[in-house]
Structures are given as C-alpha cells and as structure tokens.
Length: 150
Image 1: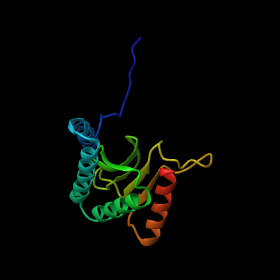
Image 2: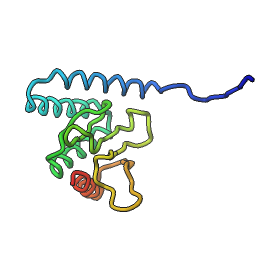
Image 3: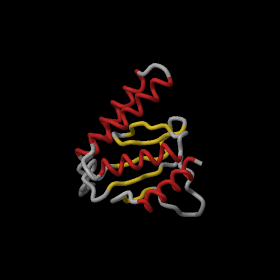
C-alpha cells in the first residue's frame, strides 16, 4: 500500500532558528559565569544590552517593562531567554518581553510562563499584545507582574 501525504510544514523559520541559537549561546555563557552575584549582574547587563539593540518603539516599551518588573517584583531575576528579556524565579522564567521585530510580528508581546501565578479561574491569558506602555498599561502590567511573582 502506498500513501501520498501532503504537508505544508517547511521547518523552523529563520527567526525561530536564530532564537534557538541565541538560547544555546545564553546557556553556554551562563555556565561560564563564576559567582551568583557575578551571574546576576552579567545577566542584567545582557538584558539591558538586548533591550538597547531593539528598534523603536519596542526599545522604549521593553525599558518600561523592565523598570516595572524591577520595581514590582524585585525577587525576579532578569535573564535572556531565547534572545528576549525575561524575568525568572529560581532559574525558571516567569515572564518575558518579545519584541515585535524579533519574529516580524504586528505587535510586541508580554508573556507569562507556567511559573507565573496568574491562574485564579478555569481560564486566563498567558500573553498580551503591547503597542504602547501608557500610564494605564503600566498599571496593568504592574498588577500582572505582582500577581505572577506572587
């Protein structure tokens, strides 16, 4: 019996492959760091450098998200995650900022992983489209980050 299959799967996009390569480099770099304090300081420098590389308006939004996370959840440690600014508890990513430019998307994304404590009902959002971090949006992000860091 012969089977004819048609598939539209073309593999990972160039952006996805680049993100995976960045993640592999991040893991190698993290393993080479010395003390816990050195690791934390270098990780934050890496996050700030990645934010500085972003085109506008993503850079401004990422800077505001970074400031909000640092203020509202100082226990979350900044780190790069697949080339994106992320914030972790005990090494596990709680939330991250994905630039629209990274995957050629229409908008930037603020995402939350399983470590985030956002689940208080049978259904909840795990990512949010962000086009501007206004005062009102900043308040919503602060509340989500506080809840996620729980």
